[in-house]
Image (cartoon, rainbow, N blue to C red; front, side, top):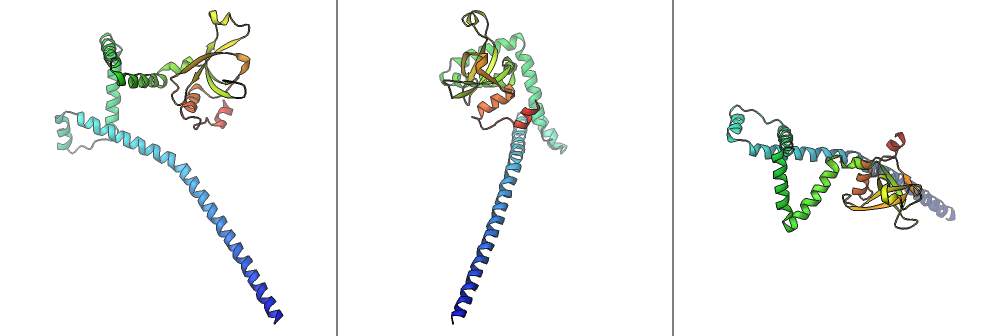
Length: 237
């Protein structure tokens, strides 16, 4: 009887070990499948979302431009069953913006722009929104970023705390005369709006120059540190 009991115990023990091994295998396979799923989402989601947003934007522009077309033009397309080419509205919009830019660069354009801005700046809430948007667009669509020549790290506002700064130039003139060492003019941007911030004068020896470009540094600031520049690309520079 004791041998039978021992045999049953051994059989139950072996069965238990086998079940635990099978469970471990299933858990390992499940974790791998889950990892593959998340990797697939990470790889495809940014591309898919980018193309979807581009498609929706082009579709929206096409719809807006289509509504602004003269009725005769729309009837012509309908009469001869001519399909609207995707992106045609975007091309028309770009052409219209170029024409507006050419007009704005002229004497009359500048006059109407100043008049429009004067009216907008008189409006309480709208003036703040307009001012912010204008600064943002001027920063990213004009050559203002070229006023910064490199990105640096420096300890601010105290030792042990580091901050990202943009060097505009070496400190010169009257300010330079008050220092005995080489100084840099460094702009410290605010997050997530880099169009505001403050200027500080820092000894060059107290800064660490980074390989990232000014554009990459601005993206880093705007994303609150999420969109970090690619390390491999920085090594190649």
